[in-house]
Structures are given as C-alpha cells and as structure tokens.
Image 1 (cartoon, rainbow, N blue to C red):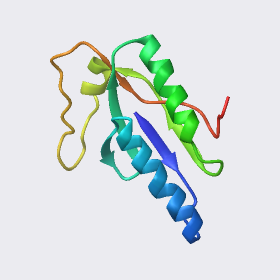
Image 2: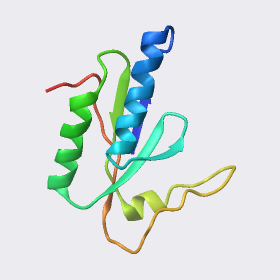
Image 3: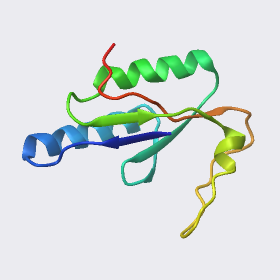
Length: 105
C-alpha cells in the first residue's frame, strides 16, 4: 500500500503529480482512493524491486510512504463507509504498501 502527499501549487508540481500516478499505474499499482494505491507482490525480493522502481521516479518534493501487509492483514481492514476494496485473495501474496520520505538511495 502506497500513500503520497505532493505539493500542487503550480503547473510544474501538478505535472509531477500526474507523472507519479502514471508511473505507479505502469508499475501495476491500483487506485484505492485519493493518494492511496495498492499492489500485490509475491515475496521479499519483489518487495525490494518495487521499492527500487518507486525510488527511481519518486519526486524530490512531497512525501511517499509505503507499508507491506500480508493479504490476510489487508483483508482485515475495516470499511466504515462506502464499498469494500476487493483484492484477488486466491494467491498467498503480500500487498505492497511502502515506507520512506523523499528516499532516493
């Protein structure tokens, strides 16, 4: 699961925001809600690869946070209002949710 908060004060910052979303989608992330995207990954090695990919296009301004949850942890998330977010639970994989602020290394 990936959360981000980027500045949107001018045209250049809005383009950076759009580029981030485009790159997340190219990497297979799925929109969950405003500034929250999720992706299912299979193992530790793949988690590290996802982090490296995200670092490669992470903007210099703003924040991106990720956290890794197992599918069982993700499924225990409670929806207070609205519809439940449905993820394919036929595989025993982990959900990519990543954790750093402006990390490039």
